[in-house]
Structure formats: structure tokens, C-alpha cells
Amino acid sequence: MSARHWVKSYGSIPPEIDPDRWSSVTAMLDQAMLRWADRVAFHACGQTLSYAQVDRLSAAFCAYLQHRLGIEKGDRVAVMMPNLAAFPIALLGIIRAGAVQVNVNPQYTPRELAHQLQDAGCRTVVVYAGATPTLAEVLDATGVDSVITVGPADGLARPLPGPAVDARLHAAVPFTQALAEGAGLARRPVAIDGADTLFLQYTGGTTGLSKGAVLSHRNLVANTEQYKVMMPEAVRPGQEVVITAIPLYHIFALMVNFVGYFSVGAENWLVANPRDMDAFIATIKAARPTVFVGVNTLYNGLTMHPGLKEVDWSRLRLAGGGGAAVLQATSERWKAVTGQFIREGYGLSETSPVVSFNPAFIDAFSGTTGLPVPSTDIRLIDDDGHAVGIGEAGEICVRGPQVMSGYWRQPEATRAAFTADGYFRTGDMGQFDERGFLRIVDRKKDMIIVSGFNVYPNDVEAVAASCPGVAECACVGVPDARTGEAVTLYLVRLPGAALTEADVMAHCRTALTAYKVPRIVRFVDALPKSVVGKILRRELRSLA
Image (cartoon, rainbow, N blue to C red; front, side, top):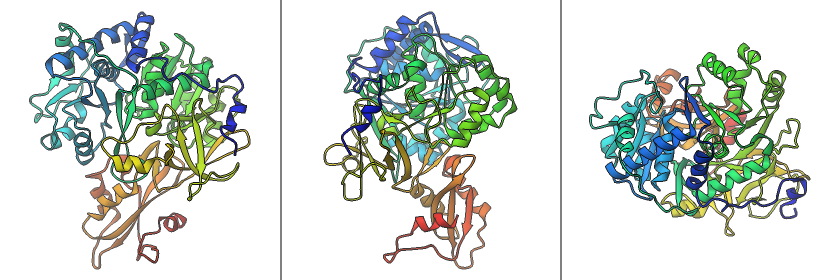
């Protein structure tokens, strides 16, 4: 296979981008706030924030962090909230201080949260009030000494009622108070360059406990530039209207919806709870988006709602899909209503995330994840590290300016994640066609993707194995029309144990985020094993 054979299919797409076009993400977003000062930046909770207001509020939050909490360049600050107006304000305040944002799922269990806060070394957490009981449970076991709590409409003109802050967090400071105090303080400018760390994006990689992918300012500047040249028709400065329903703590929405679209002055409608489908549809009706980005399960749910047909889709220019495989049937149902097929891409937390995307000249669902983005090299290799030919499956290995430097404080895991010549090993299997379009065919490891979220069997098995009555267990993913894959747990009971499916699920719910909890529990007499005693997950998948 010739080097970067996909470039011949680029057409008007430049083969290279400038990853140093901006010195940092902070500089890139600062210019957006100046250029688009009078334009609406965000819609949330029925209210709006202009770019100028985001500029002012994030500067105040930055000053608060610097003067009141002593946050300095390189310090890690955790942000644990759904898609609220406070998210972009907090993020911009954190990165203007030169600090590193650690993105945390607000649905984490105490066990998951404690690991991430300890591993990242966070001293400060910005947390949604509804998630404070989880934080309170583990706070004493972490190094966190400053908690800032967020209500639903914090940062907006009109407050809204929300969950109470857990009483155990008696020293917590409301976000509104931090903004008010910071407004009277002078923000200290911080010198930031492309090599400085921007995000710690936690991911299991391919196996095991979650690890922090170290993403630099340059990584995200590069990925923004790569995305823009793949789809210029939907990245028009000052003209786009984007719906953000996938969570901003997920790298997909974080880069594409926030960093990417904020940098070009887009109007962004934040959806905090897309499960409230009626309210979600009402938001889409009001927004009349030009850009919609989601995972297959989100699209699938919307196509099942009769209200989708009542939306004026005449302005829609891009329906982008990623996070998990987009199904052709879903794309067809979506196009029947909106007129646009779902344009699929591929990426990972470790790659900021976009690796490949179906470019603007593709006019129908391709069943592939598109062409590698500019300035990116992809090598598909076999188990011996040799490149495979066109049409043959191999592990996808990526090199480019959007690829992380490594995992936070895990040199061994970092070494294992890269080939000797510096390509990141994704653990995913893919194949190229003659034109250079990449198709994902399987995962080399056993990771399960539920609604775009990674579930690692070792994590589930560790929790399930601690359930009284379990002799041994193994976890696999099976295809599911609603969530892409369903977590399926195979269990062997201890002799005499009267363990039920409900018992196992209840136990798992105490230590696992909802999407990781097994949807299916099957009891078996024995698990298939190799001659050396290794459980053969592939045989379990064939039983499903």
C-alpha cells in the first residue's frame, strides 16, 4: 500500500494543515470572543450568552481561580457537569489561567470518580450540584481542597431552581459567587504555547483502568484545522447554528461542537438532558440548526419521535456521526425526514479525536468513516507489525499533530500504546479501499461501545466478580439496535448460591455508571477457556 494513498482522493482538500496557526487554543478562542462579541454564543435553559458575555464571565472565573484558589499554570482542575452554560465559562476560565481541564462524567460512581481525581492530582473541582453526593462520598480520599458548585442556569441572567448541594460539602463555593468575586479582580495573563497541556481526557485506551490522555493546545488547534478543511461548507464563519446534545465532557463534542465551532463564531444550543425527547425536539425546532452532531443511538432515538417531522430542516448542512458505528438504516431514516444523510467519522480520545471523516464531496452514506484528515498518516498493521494491503484488515495506527503525547504519568502504558516509529496503536481493526476510505471492521481488544461510550470488560468483571455468589464471570458486547452494543455478562455461580439476575445488576449499579451496568446476565455452567485457562470472550460472543 503506497504511503498516504488517500491523498489522491482529496480533490480540493489540502494535504497538510498548519498545526501552529494559533499559538494555543486559548489564543484561538480569545480571537473568536473579540471578533464575534455581539453574536450569540450559547443558548441554554431558555436564555442566551453572547461571545462578549462569555469573554467577561470566563475572565472573572480565571481571576477567581488565580487569586482566591492559587491556581497556576499546569494545575489540574476537574469539571464535572452536563451541558450547561457554566461549562464553557469554566473551561475558558481554566485554560486562560494556563491550567489543565480534567473532564469528568457527572454520572460517575464514587469509585470511578475517586480514581480519576486521585490519578489526575486535582485540587479543585467544578461540579454540578446534582453530582455533589458522589463527590461528597469520596472527597476525603482525594487531594481536592476546593469545590465550586454549579446550578442549572449559573452564568445566565435568570437563575433557575436546581438540586441541593450535598450538606457534607459545607465549604463549597457557588459558581455564581466565584464569578462575582472574580469580576472585581484583575486576571493575570499567562504565557501559553502549543506544547502546554490543555486537557486530561480519561479513557481506558483498550483495556484496564482509565488513563488520562494528555492532549496539548497544539493537538486541539491541529484537529480544529483538520476538521475545517474536511467540511468547509459547514464551518462558515459567523453563520453556523449547532445543536450540542452529546456531552461536552466527551472529546467528540468538546472538540467539534465547542472548540471547533466556537472558534468560527457559531451559535450553539446546549442540551443538558437529551433523554427528555419532547424538550429536545422543541429545542431543535427553535434552533433550526445548520449543523447537528451525534452518535448513532441519538439519531436513532430522534427518528423514532414523531416531532422530528415538525422541525424545519431547510438550513441543515451537516449531520455528523461518530463515537460508535453509524448504521445505514439509521442514516436512511434520518435522511428521509431531514434530507441529509449522516456523515460518519472516526476518532479516539487519544487523537483529539478526529482521525478520518467523510468529506464534503461525498453525497451519500458510504458505510466508511471517510478519508484520513490532512497531515495524518495511518498505517494498518498485522500482528507482526507489518503493513497490510488494500482491502486487508489490520490494526489502525495513527501519526499526526492531533495525536496525544502519551498517558498521564504512565510511561509504560504510553510505550505500549505506540509503535517503535511513533504511531499510536488504536486497538481498532480497519481496512482501506483503493480510494483511501477507511472502514472499521472490528476491535482488536474487547472494548464495548454503548451509545458512544467506552465500556471495558475488565472494569465490569472486577465489580461483578465481587458479588456474593459469583464463582467467575466474563463480559462481552453484543449487537443492540438501540445502543449499538449491549453489555452482556456470563456468570458461573458458586455451588449452592441462589444468585439471580436482579441480584447481579443491583450489585453492579453500586459501583458502575449506568451505561456500564450489564443489560443481560446469563448463567452458565462453565466459561470457555484456552488450554492455559484464559477465558475465551470470542466464544461467548458467538453464543449471543
